[in-house]
Length: 310
Ligand code: FAD
Image (tube, rainbow, N blue to C red):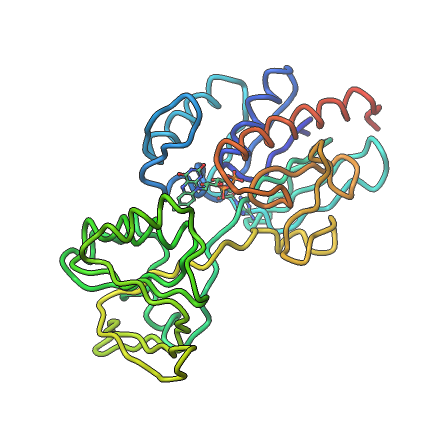
C-alpha cells in the first residue's frame, strides 16, 4: 500500500508527488493524462520566475522532476471510485477503470477541471468537425478561415487573441452586456483588426452542412432579433467544470462540484486531501495549483505521523 496516493497528474498532482516523495514515504501518482490542462496551454507568462514558457515544455519538466524521485507513476489510468478508510489508520481505496484497486493510507485528489459545454443544438454533433474547446490544439486547423469564440471571460478573450493570429477573422460572442476579461486582454483584443466583438449575444444553435460547421445562430438580447454568422469553426470558452463526479457521496462538494477544502487542503474526510482546480480554492492557475499540491502533501505527511497504521 502507498502512504500517499495522488489522483491527477497536473501541476497540483506533480507538486504533491514531489513534496511527498521528498519525505521518503511510499508515493504513487495515477493520472488519466499526465500534465493535465497544461498540455493544452501554449504560452505561459505568469509562472513566477519563468518569463515565458510553453505548456508541453512545462509538462516535460514536471515529469522529469517527478521522476527524479521514487514515485510510482501510473499514467493513462482513470480513477472511477474513492472508498475512504473505514477506520482511523485504515487504508483508503482508489478503484481504476481497468478494475485495479490501489490502497493508500492517505489520498490527494488533484483531478483538475475541464471546459464547460454550451449545450446548444449542433454542439455535440459537430464536435471535432468545427466545434472546438482548445484553440492551441485546433487553431491551426482553421488557418485563414472565419471562426467564433463563445465567451468573453479571460479564456474566451485569450482564445480570440490567439486565434486572430492564425485564422482569417474572429467573432467573439459574449452573453453579457460587456466582456469580463482583464482590461489588458480587452485592450489587446480591440487593437486587432480582424476581430469583431458582439456583446449581449446568446448563441442558440451551431449549424452545419456536409458534416462540418458552417455557421451559428445567436439572439441579440437587446433587440430580440435572431442573427446568423457564417463560420468554419466555433471555440467554446465559457468556463471550467471540476473533474469530481467520481467523488459524489464520499467527500463534501460545493454547489459547483468543487471539493470543499480548508486552508490545509483537508476535505470533509480524514486522510483524504485535495488540491488545485478541482477544489474550492479560488483562482485556477498553475502556480496556485502547485502551491496547493505541495500543501496537500505536507498535510498528508502530518496526518501520517499522527496516526498509527492498522
Ligand atoms: P489539471 O491541470 O486539470 O490536471 C488534472 C489531472 O487529473 C490530469 O492529469 C487529469 O488527466 C487527471 N484526472 C482527472 N480526472 C481523473 C480521474 N478520474 N482519474 C485519474 N486522473 C484524472 N494557468 C496559468 O497559471 N497560466 C496560464 O497561462 C494558463 N493558461 C491556460 C490555458 C488553457 C488553455 C487552460 C485549459 C488552462 C490554463 N491555465 C493557466 C490554467 C491551468 O492550466 C490550471 O489552473 C492548472 O493546470 C490546474 O492544475 P491541476 O493540477 O489542478 O489540474
